[in-house]
Length: 618
Image 1 (cartoon, rainbow, N blue to C red):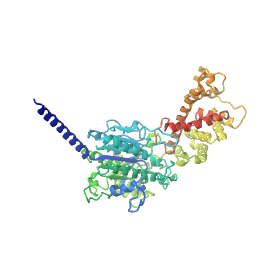
Image 2 (image 1 turned 120 degrees about the horizontal axis):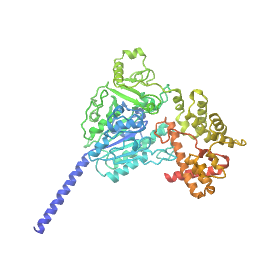
Image 3 (image 1 turned 180 degrees about the horizontal axis):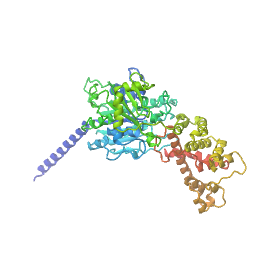
Image 4 (image 1 turned 135 degrees about the vertical axis):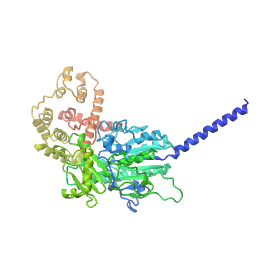
């Protein structure tokens, strides 16, 4: 074979290979990408679409209003984040995907997520979480080649703000994806943290409120959309903004309906915008209509599967049909019945052993809450759902019988309200727990609950002791110790009150003053953090390097104090996180020892070091 023939074959091979690569590139670019932005506490009422609603502002909401299908009657499947987001990614109701709360074990591996279908279709996949409760252990990492939950909480922030999450997503999109299709989720818990300081683009500090957090989220959303447009990925990306829950508006009179258990519309009717991928031609108008018929977050999941090319079956929801929303992305006419039943639930009480599952069904303009004394609302005439219909009117509505039959058929239990103990623990306002200037009022509230015999509870006792220590209320700490037989609380209180000859039977505290610190004494103290403190303060007796032990203790103590902050915020939010220590917010021996008068200088040194260590970690 001649040299010329060899060259012709090589050139032909390269040409065919190049053509194949071009074809593959075209196939990839022809697929539309999908971006899901899932936010806690984003109700339909938080976003107003109007010609001048956001005039002169950099509003991501307004950009979506201008180019999206807006669903005015979208309902979550659960008031808790993990089951609600599981419905978005599986197209199933919680009773089908079996995730009923934010605790373990999470979504089972055999349940297919839309992200797994995306991987099969050669999409690049990513998930960026802002923090608790959405971590890898939720089971929602399936199908995501990048599941970014590497969040280092700090004293200044326990979550990763949406702005930072969006920046990480854009970096991944530019550097890892290129022009290929992607399927991504951004989870934003931001709106829960209403006492987080935020600033405007002009550097002005906003006030501490829910509305300020919404403004911050809105501006960050605008920046993200602008960057996606600059990257020329906007038109070929379906963007879904979805609220996972609403929020209490403060107008509901029944204090038993705190957020995690409230199944009324203010807490379950969520924001939902879908901006479809659209190959615009010159003169094409953007899609911006609204759909007023009831939809569910499970419908959003069904839609994802269809957008990814999966054939969908409209009846696989059993008694509660699930419908793809792709039809209304092309025409505003909905194809599903107005009166189809949509189930909504809260598994919080079941999770916390405080009661059974709480279930509601919405059907057209009728909301049925399956309590032991069922509540039925006509949402058309009672938009605030302030007054349940009387039993006689309930019995005359045909819908009542239909919904009751569905409840019985699916064996959903009637919900019994929480007992007074739980109500007491969760009755204290969020601001009391999260703002330092509110601590004296928080301590007052806890004392009041602790003095009521009806509310005798170990949690309330521990919380009161911790706040007494924080506020240096030594009388209260001493009295709590005497009354409840906790000698170390009594001892620290009496030392700070200069009471003569205070004593404690605690074997750990004795290590601070005993002449010898031998192995036997150390074994009697089963408290690793306190033993780290002893190793530092008694380093000379222990034969240890004092500076090394100081650094070791300060690191351990920083982790303890951060865990305390997490526990405290979890209480404030209504115990919605699956924390490492089961709701234990109480003073440790090490913290108590640092508050002894003789350790004042050491305490000042330790607390100053906490700030330095926290900055290094973040």
